[in-house]
Figure 1 (cartoon, rainbow, N blue to C red):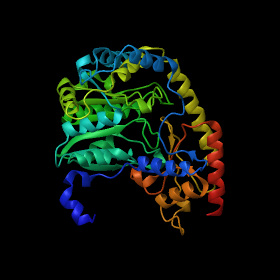
Figure 2 (cartoon, one colour):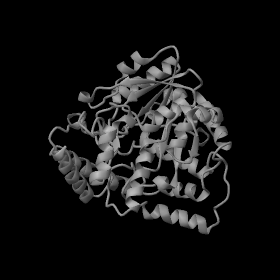
Figure 3 (cartoon, rainbow, N blue to C red):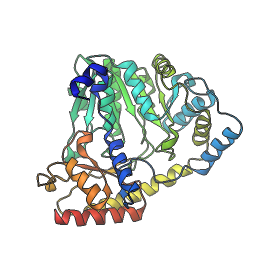
Length: 397
């Protein structure tokens, strides 16, 4: 099918988005794995831990109890109650169950929020580097991403001053991710409060993707939802995927003003409808149960972060900011770019995959051109094996 033919068949909106870069990398890695390649996979952003036993048991019990039918679109009362109570306990927020919606993964919460708030021509401030799907979700809704460059020398820090300068009369929303994917940056508490209050004063919606909020390594945990006097313009977009090692369960949520949550539920009613009933039961067990598993996983991620940073420092020419959260490193590989077969990060990532079987994601997917993203949610042995392969590769480049 030619491009001209395709343009006559497909709706305009599908042409405004691209295939998820991380999913494309995952698919290519799967092909090599099927051919027998022994990969070290720094590509997929998902925990290496198994879902905790008590969460799996809750799902099994729910299935055996025949909790396998449709539920109310926004989620069963127990799961919405568990979401708001867990958030209030940990962050001092003040949401009611009808200000919460349970979604099929955190990505759907982000997608639905953008679709109900952003119209054609609306601007959404988006700091760079950004998670791969933000740009496409905004553009799919007809919005315009306004890219806010950050300084690598300052750990890609997002400041209230920079946000304020990026605001125009067409700014409808600000989309922030802290801790961030891909760089693991954390917005300083003072800056977060100033951004929350700035957005509230200007009538701009602040969309806070907090799927890594429990994976912070500096200071106390903080959510934008803590600023209860500004909740009219705040949407907290969350996920159980990273916190409880539940990526494949597709369990996400949103907290926000009742009218916006109702609109998101309305959209969901015409797309995915409700999330699987037994997944909701498992989510209740995760949120209401002991949080010791979260603390244990966070401690291991911190040890893995320090391990991979130390090993990356052994490769001449590669520099890397120190992540303050999440489970990614975002090394600068510009010293090796511009050479035959490595003109850009995309080519470099492809060669790493095919020549030494190390899976990474190129920086182009996140809005920069000189970086690779490595997800270090792997075993300690895999960190060493993967960096050993990369050292050997770069030594010959």
